[in-house]
Length: 369
Image 1 (tube, rainbow, N blue to C red):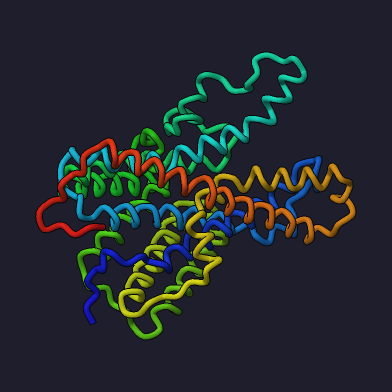
Image 2 (cartoon, helix red, strand yellow; image 1 turned 90 degrees about the vertical axis):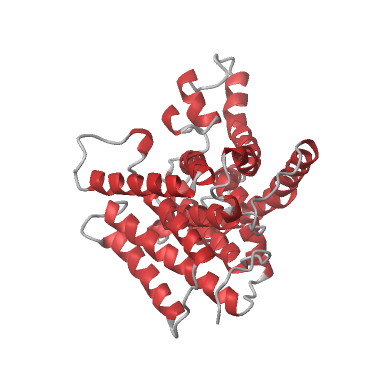
């Protein structure tokens, strides 16, 4: 059966992947945030969810796939499409991030204000580019710890403009980037690449871009038992990343995770082109709001745990119950933030942009993404 793209269809299974990836990160942080002295002083539940960070690796591959798959019709259309592309990415990422950043700054601001301390913000000017603008050369972001991954996302969006300018040039640039990253990992370069360009997550993004091109341009196979094989490969990649000879967070493990995640995405796309995939509504809703959940969950978990301390229940309730309360607050709060703030704001900003900027004529022969 042909595997030609159906541009108007929504890949529901990828929403489920986004939801699961976000939940993995939340599970990890719900136990790790207990380790501060005012809470448990140790990682909760024996660190059973320490592998949850692999959800971020899946996000990076998924990011490269989605922007390539969605914007495939615009590839090579010229620099005139940069404005529309970057605006869409800006309204998707920055407004809700700035809101979560402001909410994260507020407790520190009020504390310093009440104590008459100056300056009111405990952040230097040198940290502003990395924290407010998410510029990867501006230092690690303050207050919202998970925003380090958004710095890479901004870098990836800027690099993708090369693909919009000219596909051949963009692919050559990405191939050189991948080659230099691999060379750096094996000591083939005299020093580190600037802007963290040699970080393994960059290769994960590039794997996603390649998967997006394959999904749009070739007939994807779907073999008997392929789903089970890909699931086994993903589990094996997680185990290798965690327990392999290089240790956790090493180059080889991250590459293995990226390859397994790309295989999973392509398998789901091939599956959806053959038969509809029904995703449970709660999982689909969580996938649609996974960005808000990802951004806000650490703040919400801290609020939930601090509230339990305040009312005297933290030392009374079993650790498993504390964990479940923190998870419930994070998931429900993140979903609510996405459902009633993030998504309406994004929709409103895109409508305003469409009303102010004339519609761009699509390249001849292109199909809507």
